[in-house]
Length: 86
Image (cartoon, rainbow, N blue to C red; front, side):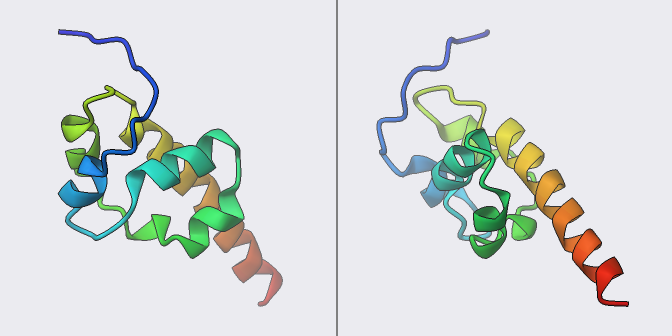
């Protein structure tokens, strides 16, 4: 069953469900704003992409989708930094 996403109600269920102790709602917000450097400091690379956040979200936000996008962009930044420093 597909549900339409609604606004985040800041209930914190996604954070409570995250086995890695991340704040998916914050990572989602940073990703939608393309704030990838900030995502690195919020430990987006620790995400194991289990989907618990999206599953528990009462607003049906595509949290995992945006976390994956942000994680991929953050990894590009990290890799380019490593190449520069070699």
